[in-house]
Image 1 (cartoon, rainbow, N blue to C red):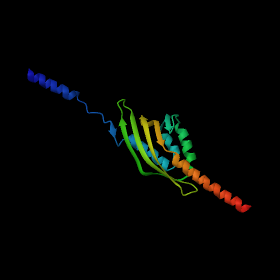
Image 2: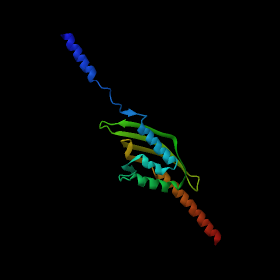
Image 3: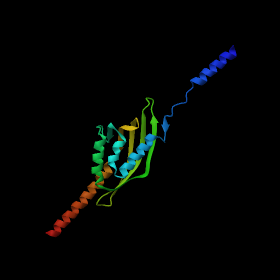
Image 4: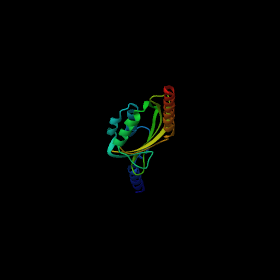
Length: 173
């Protein structure tokens, strides 16, 4: 009888054991989506971004106010007109976690590097982003970077152009 109870107890324990849910990974379809997103930015393919985001996605870029994917695409196209080359040095580093609520979050780190058009000024900025996925689409994004290097580069370029204009005006007198 004791053996029967022991066997029944052992079977119950073995059958009730579940494999633990994998909560951290560095390879997943969601991570590949983020790598594709960065590739679209590098390739100046902003229109393709719409396939990666849910229709009602909320995107927070250095702000507490959200934007839509169409806002980000419009701003990206406008900003890209000022940049000669655009790359993520060393690629994009990503990891995905599934939190206790079952949400899939992809974290990414990138070293963005670009050269201003009309100059030789290279801008380098670290970017960190966090993306929430539902049904294979990005529904929320938080991206942060330091804009100061860009502001300084544009200010230097504007100052140089102003100096050149002043010199030209002086020569014309």
